[in-house]
Image (cartoon, rainbow, N blue to C red; front, side, top):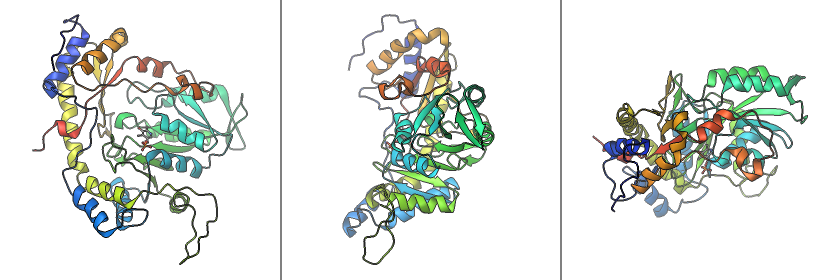
Length: 398
Ligand SMILES: *Cc1c(COP(=O)(O)O)cnc(C)c1O
């Protein structure tokens, strides 16, 4: 493909394009944002499911991926689910979120965070993010709660809506751990349950603890674009054995064990992960450390390539955290926000698939009327963030 020369060959779009080109080389075909890599036992394990007939809701790979995930994350229990959104839905239910409650969450997140809370009948209450991690800003959230909420009998009440603010759902954006210490102590002060949307952060550690192992309950995603894929899938993580038991029960139609009778003791969900998907995930998990190592090398190459590009910051892991670098991210300085579209155009035109932030939740029609804090930091970031191609195969195995 012939790449049209940029109109302004000396501006920021040109500098960004040159930096990306120096990392990835010229692209004759589209370089995706993130594509899965199957170089291990994936085929063997999936074939075994087909050969034995164990492809669906029962089979040994579901048990194995749950044990392997618990071991990898250092969490006592993992319950595999059909996708990350379903895992988040059950997290909300098990955190005690009830119809009419409010759940604090960043406006800067993927739609699944807000949808999962809506499925439980609760209302998202959007809060602002911070520049370092792109995660929820604990200082601004504290100020917001002081303004709009009060503690009544140990519960956090929104003074203007009268609703119980039940939980805080944090999200580790692009794999960078949010400021969990500050957010944990905020939750303690305000009687909130901390839920982690760790969908993007398998392989990311906060102060030595795996993300998802800090809050009361957490969700992972194994969608095709995440660091590890099962085709579609997810998992619930918790250290609480009773929550884990409830998670397994609710995600498997709430069926009561019996040799042949079909007895269900509450309205459950068909949210279990099929065995064939779990098989793919078991093979992926064997290679996760090695894939993360190459993703880390790619991140280092981006940092080096952008080090002398003025007006740009490459997002790096926060102090005392280890990121999985799911998606590499550049942040334009506020004075360059006007170049955002032009940079995206230059990169995508040259076959480097690049994407802006999600549309912020409060700017989508179904969530426009939800309660919210001042969101000026998230709104500013939405005009300045760009994700770059981040697949592990962009760095060759040694
Ligand atoms: C991917 C993702 C999810 C879950 O997505 P599924 O496609 O349902 O597995 C949830 N939250 C965030 C922030 C995500 O990026």
